[in-house]
Length: 219
Image 1: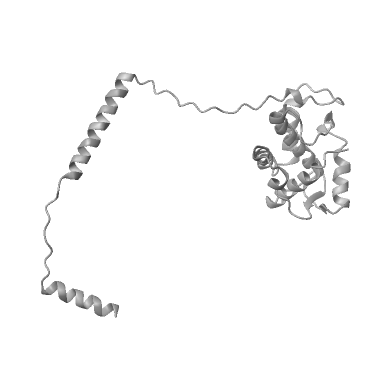
Image 2: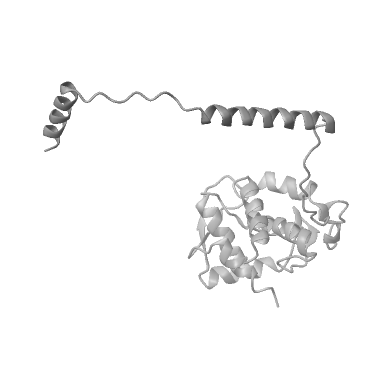
């Protein structure tokens, strides 16, 4: 039995592609699922789809994909549209109803991984994607045709640790600079505390005439 979460995942990918006005062929959809499985494995040490990926024609392939795609079309989850797009296929798959990624992937880290894959590849041509998955993904490295792909070659994702870089300034110079800053701040406080001379306003006839005219314009 296939992973049931794959069905809404495919619909979410189709929704994302339509929002980007990107052509989504059968081959492109398959390779996008593979790329997400690679990134998902990086964190969870298992694939999301649970497909049995193997090295076949055009790189990563699984015989579990086509029946799922056909079922989605048959049940009305995806709508195939014929197209004259200059890709290898003439069918563009559209979602019948939009399904957002966050409705499928509740883990924000997994959601981010899928969005990174789609932002990078959903608008690319099939040829560009094939080149990437064939030569630049770990399970395909040294893969043997017609044999299962080894996802254990995917390295574990290591979180990036923040470390403030050293300025190579000596402790003595740092203390001196802090002293200069403190002295400067004290000077500013002293200057702000000095009372400025105050000149009382002159309320003469000219002032009252101006006020009167202003009031007339406001009434």
